[in-house]
Image 1 (cartoon, helix red, strand yellow):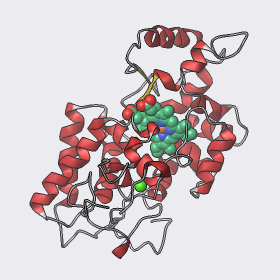
Image 2 (cartoon, protein in one colour; image 1 turned 90 degrees about the horizontal axis):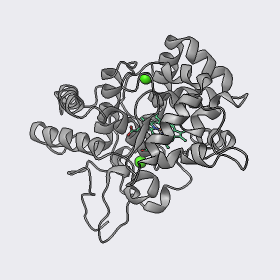
Image 3 (cartoon, rainbow, N blue to C red; image 1 turned 135 degrees about the vertical axis):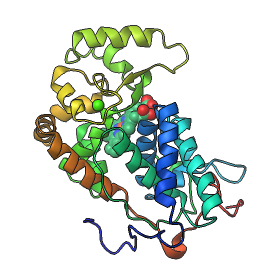
Image 4 (tube, helix red, strand yellow; image 1 turned 60 degrees about the vertical axis):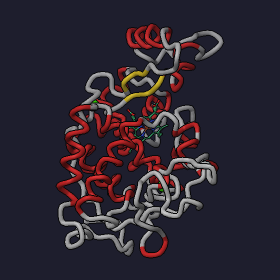
Length: 313
Ligand code: HEM
Ligand SMILES: [Ca+2]
Ligand SMILES: [Ca+2]
């Protein structure tokens, strides 16, 4: 059952016009994820970055051109991995062969994200379909709509509240960090210049802090990264929450979940009860996946996911 009504989306939107939609998405994500195991986490983050800016409308997929500097060029989006964009492009190519000009890129991203979460062991949730792709993607729209690892919990809660998410839903969504990476730049202040008296946050597990330091010391070109869940980085489970009290979170924003009375109880609940986490994560993802969706004439079905159909807009 969907929490969101009146958005004109439906589960069987492509039933007549593109009956193989679900199968094609599943086949492509399985092939891609088997070859590039970072695809799932990258795609889940790409989906978040799409939905939080202008809604789930594929605006993050558009590449900049001479007429327009797009969202992709915002500094926070530069670390989105190419494999995530690639899996969407591959699905689009296959769908254009099967049912040309029918399936939107925003629907592809929403469905692929869900299937990748399931493939990594996470919960199934329904993805209603019929999103149209947005006609706007501006680099300036990004700032202020996406969370940063150096934000206070107060700022993070406000940001998610502005998109309609409760503290509990936000904590459940953060469980996405049970898979994937963070680059050294995102946590180097916590290990090298935490305070005047101690360079390293004493709440990071000391052995883990040493491992992070020696890894990031070799980070000459900014490519080194740590798992957001160091124990089960490829498995979608509730380990991320169990890691928090052990000092095994690299990102300050992850550790902050157990430092704030508004979020701590939920993080403890999900650490103790994976079923509760899966249920709440699934409902929160359903909600995220219909955030400010565009239907009818408010958008288009892009021919290519990385450009608007009218190249001069
Ligand atoms: C307080 C809120 C959040 C903050 C501050 C935050 C911040 C970050 C940062 C800094 C990274 C590392 C990016 C990099 O260095 O490449 C990251 C990765 C990731 N984030 Fe979040 N995030 C938040 C919430 C979420 C939510 C709600 C989701 C999804 C529902 C999500 C999904 C992911 C995933 C899957 C990755 C791994 C990406 C990869 O491996 O390529 N995050 N996040
Ligand atoms: Ca968007
Ligand atoms: Ca995990």
